[in-house]
Length: 374
Image (cartoon, rainbow, N blue to C red; front, side, top):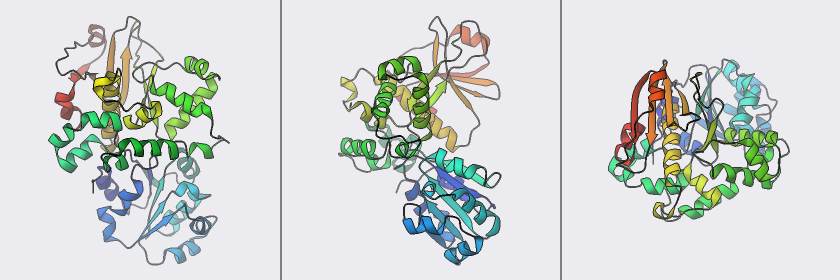
């Protein structure tokens, strides 16, 4: 059993008179986490699933008295796939307000579905947490730094979905299954989206552009649609935890890129499945950007799990001065360059150092990955 970093954080937030909402993509291990959460063993717990029709009916348009009859003497209620339940926000509010002796935890694979239907009813009544595919730090904790460090190339190619990590030798088969069966599942339920070739085309275009600034106009021309459609679909990809945006840093320094953005994948294995490329790094031309995507997504996971309040960017000027990744905290900046080559030498841009308070500048390669991700 691989322990998840967020487990301890969730346990610390139990029985604070708040609902706990756990968001994340399908297949990242939300149900497994809760089934094995050590602190739940201290309470009588009832697990319910929004995938089951009778459970959906019981928890829809209900009353506190009816809920008490369903829950009995259980102290903790877990509602898995809660976004499947109509008016789940109102039901969670009832539990939180009227059944104060009960702690409720609800999971959702589509953050925007559960967040939108729960947001207003649960204002001031909820803690929100996010679960991602397994992380470098979690795997180091599981079997040690040396073992995990030897797996870096494997992780760049196949990623960190639990089913992939737990089935060595079958990575490609399981990744294709996740990509084909789960990746778009939540999207099809929204805004009358059907199995559209736009989904695959847009996502493949993004997969081929990781590490580069993304132009909605270029993708629209490539796919054969308009900018608004591209923007809408990318937002849906974000909300279903497939990709995330990294904006350009700009504070009116002369010649800075003002409105640029890059888009990365939360999991490099999913990215490679989208383009159908599982070749070893020695036969690839995209090793550098895979390394960049891997490090940025892992760093963001770490920051979110640690509940760090940092803003993240890339930086570029019109003269092509560039920094791969920047973190801003308390008006101080840490700047990072990512190089797969352990011997690469990179200097910090003079323009950047003259205009920003740089607390730290580092070049991250496989030899010092632990400094960045643990």
